[in-house]
Length: 153
Image (cartoon, rainbow, N blue to C red; front, side, top):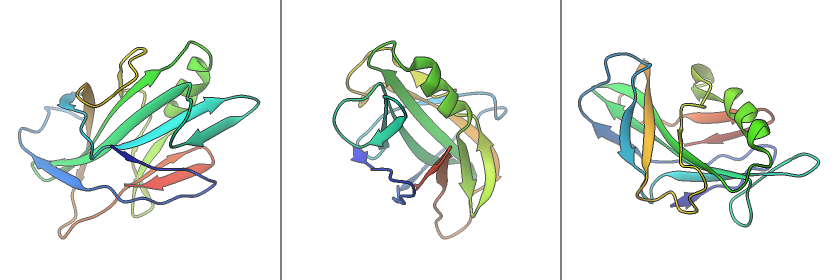
C-alpha cells in the first residue's frame, strides 16, 4: 500500500485503473478490493489533527482513483482504531473534496466504506463513487483536499 505524509501541503501521484460497468448514478457505489496501489492516510487527534503515514492513528483510510466507462470514480475505505476522534474524523471527511485541475469534482468522502476497527485495509472492500466527470485523455491526477491539507493522487 502506498503511503503519503501530509504536511501543510504534500503531493503524491497514484495510478488510475480502468474498469467497466458504470454505476447508474453518482450515488450508487461500486465496491473494489483495497490493494497495495491505494494511497493510505492516517489521522491522529490530540489538541489538533495530526496527519501521518505511519504510527498510531485514530482513523486511517485508503483511496484510489479509477476510470469506469470514461468517468472518474473515487474509491475509499477507512477504519477507526478507537472511538476517540470518530466525530472529528467524520467532520474532516465531510469537508474533504476531490479536485481535478483545481476544480471540485466531488465533495464529502464519508461514503468511504467503514471497516470498523480492522487494522489492515488491504483485501477489504472499498466503496467507489462516480464523479460524473469525463477522464481526460492521456492520464491525469486528482487532489484530495481536507481542511488545511492537500494531496494529489
